Length: 367
Ligand SMILES: Cc1cc2nc3c(=O)[nH]c(=O)nc-3n(C[C@H](O)[C@H](O)[C@H](O)COP(=O)(O)O)c2cc1C
Image (cartoon, rainbow, N blue to C red; front, side):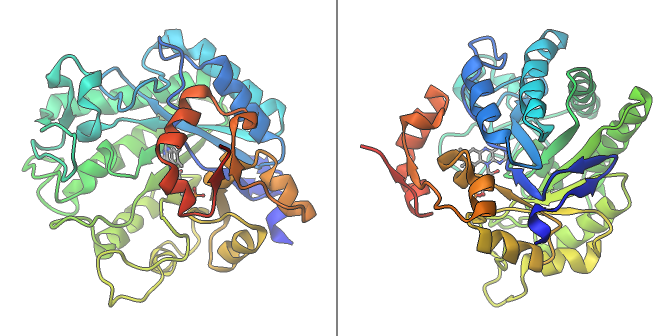
């Protein structure tokens, strides 16, 4: 069974192909360092996985999207992130930090200075509770790229095995690629090609920073293949984006989907599976992580059969810290979410406030 065999990723070997999907915990200390509760939560879930991707981590004060979001915004955060990376690695999993900037999706109340809500262009997201962002100047875009690269260097200093650039789920990197949020006419926008300039420049600078560090360090890129808005990212746009990613020195790419085997959310008549559309371009040149509804051994195996090299799981590892061990040994999985699962308190509270999201996926809550 390929799922549980070691897998070579860059200079590293994962003990199996199972990955913990990046999940925000909303549970940092008040100063945005990693809390003891978070360390215990990740450590408890790391013992049988090949790789753990941590919560979206803010690359600067301006990047902060959520309350109590962990940060790598300056050197003072290296020590607390080091403790997290070490806790994951001690359990035998690779530790990868997800680097993030919320852009126009930042919760406005977290930013006393409304100037901190920025994006590619001054276009508000089609969502409740968000602010109209300020368009970054060209110089500021360079600064944001620098912020990502500086955070990546801190991740290297903290001992992580890699970093994932969070280009998915409507956040800033996606906002630069999206024709909805990017109406620029400089070198960062104006055509499909130019909307890729931000991601391409960031990846290239990240690769250089890793080379300079002189030790093995993985670089991954996560993206969402479509947007519902008009204009919005289409599968055709994404094929071009994947063609660009394919030319980069990335160790993996990661598509963020609600269902690993789904087809288009924009065009119901387009029955192609999104993974097939991606692999038609990527041709397995870079390992691809699949995610979304991979909650059982059957779905994990089916995901590999669909052409993913690695499979990530989110909700199921929240609900069952021993998920990987249990699917390997054929034991029944826990699907009841409760206080004994070593969930950080604010995360548990969030889940309780968002019960339907988990209930739709077959999870229940202890009363
Ligand atoms: C509580 C929670 C927090 C999440 N936070 C992030 C995040 O920080 N970064 C990210 O890229 N995706 C995030 N996601 C999305 C997951 O990585 C994953 O793509 C999604 O949950 C689908 O996989 P699943 O069906 O296995 O849960 C989050 C999901 C959940 C449930």
